[in-house]
Structures are given as C-alpha cells and as structure tokens.
Length: 117
Image (cartoon, rainbow, N blue to C red; front, side, top):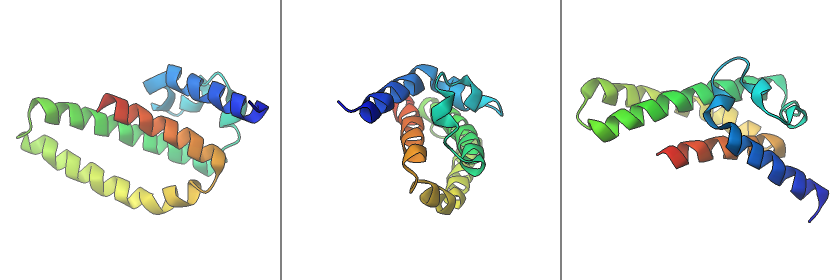
C-alpha cells in the first residue's frame, strides 16, 4: 500500500472517530487529530464545510423528528427550508469537489449523515 493510501485511510479513520464533534462550530476544524490534512483546505473550503456541517446537524434533527412524528407540519416546513438551503449550496459544492482533499473530507462528513439516517 502506498504511503498516500495509508495516510488517507488513517485520515478517514480519524474523521470517523471525531464524528459529530468535527463539524459543529467555528473551532470545528481544530478538533481533528490530523490538522495538516484539514489545513490543506483553503479558507473558503473550510468555511463551507463549517456551514455544511451545521446544515447536516439541522437536517439530522429534522429527520429524527420526522421518524417519530411524520405529520408534524412545523418540522415538515423546516425540512423544506433545509432542502432549499442545500440546493443553494450546490454550485459552490460542485466547484469544491474538484479538489481531491476537499472531496475526501466531504465524503466522510456525508457518511455521518447516512449512518445516522
């Protein structure tokens, strides 16, 4: 296994261990044990991941409520608003995904959402 693959596996393992704590606030990126990997993201990418992490947290909460109470109209309105919000992020996300490091971090973060849903 190449050193680059080994480094990626280690990084993805760390991402998995940090879980939800990795994307919840302005100091979120500081919680990773491999800051050199995170620091490879430019400032705009870091800011996007923080915004996207907050969106994921909101989305997970709305999803949990929907599972328990599918007819909660207030929660359904929040779900619609969150869907519209993420649609507005798509152009920026598409551009950032061209960067391999960003792509790895993004994929690890959406795995968290999939695992919780």
